[in-house]
Amino acid sequence: MNAKLFAAAAIGLLSAGCGKAADAAPPPVAVTNAWCRAAPAAAPAGGCYMTLKAASEDRLVAVEAKAADHAEIHTMSVDGGIMRMRELKEGLALKAGAATEFKPGGLHIMVIKPTAAFAEGTSVTLTLKFAKAPAQTIAFPVRAMATGGHHH
Ligand SMILES: [Cu+2]
Image (cartoon, rainbow, N blue to C red):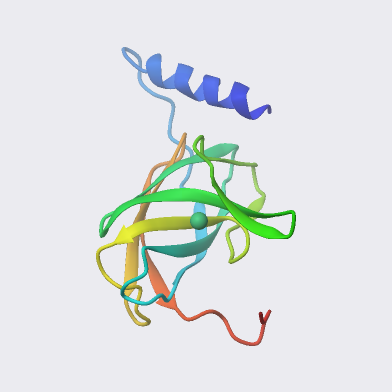
């Protein structure tokens, strides 16, 4: 479905919610491989990653961070040889049954002005909000960049 149509449909459902019993909420979106990348205490922002899989078409609409100013959903792309990040202000569409991977160099959650350092062994609590599926609050363990994979 077209993303804009989908968003409009979701808003329509919300505003039509009074009066009759709501349809049963879809099952929670499966969240796996959640982690945040370790960063120095003075870092102005930190990156967190995960894999999302929704049973039915949905949308990640927002992420909330307790111990930070706020969090944003970002993509990263190479533009003229320069890596650029862009905020997905309308969230991210999730296709039914398809895994969406957030990873360094691609989709990520940007935690802005964290109040505690992203130190290995700690975790970062984020709440994922979806258009249809119930919100989920998850502790993202902090890890150093994975070794053995891609090196810069
Ligand atoms: Cu970012």
